[in-house]
Amino acid sequence: MERKVYYSRLLDFYGGLLPEKQQACMFQYYYDDLSLAEVSENLGITRQGVRDCVKRGEAALEKAESELKLVEKDDEKRRMRAEIAEKLSALAEDLPEEVAKRVRALVESIKAMDV
Image 1 (cartoon, rainbow, N blue to C red):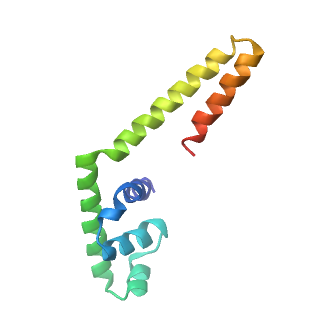
Image 2 (tube, rainbow, N blue to C red; image 1 turned 60 degrees about the horizontal axis):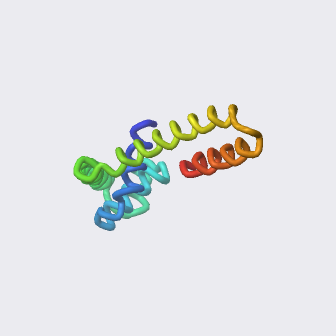
């Protein structure tokens, strides 16, 4: 399952860089969770053709990530926001109630960024 999540994230960031046929194969295989045979039937190509298309698409997505590192940067931003939210939550406990309420609202806004 982790593999599917990884390639789905790569598709989110780099899917538009793929040719249409590869996009169609990749989106159906990873987003729609269809088997190679189901994608083959939908697109009117052989199962082996779909497999080759998916493998080439995976390689292209990995190459894009190795060069641009957008997913890695996104992960780092998520970690930083979580750390900031955690520190603000701890800080809010020692503040006057009105200020703590504002800080907690800010924490909720930060957490909503990752939804």
